[in-house]
Image (cartoon, rainbow, N blue to C red; front, side, top):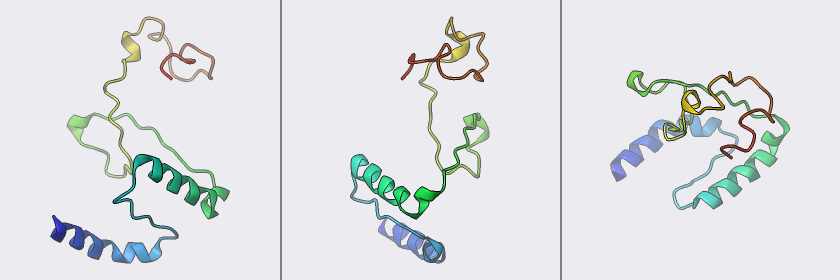
Length: 103
């Protein structure tokens, strides 16, 4: 395992030199990670708005190659099978059928 970490660090060294910020998250709790991320995002990066793309995909076809973060939300109720949501198309503004429902 240690050899794998060393190899990963060696391969990522050129990328690390290009980075504006980097964090060693090895010993961070999720709360510390959140605070560290917020601190970085309030700096230079705070001037730009982040871009978030939500993409639905099938695991049987593999995770999209360009995905930075993947969240498995298969445990959430499928709107097709939730009475008041079936006819919704997901394009309505907040205050529609989902307002506060799964928050």
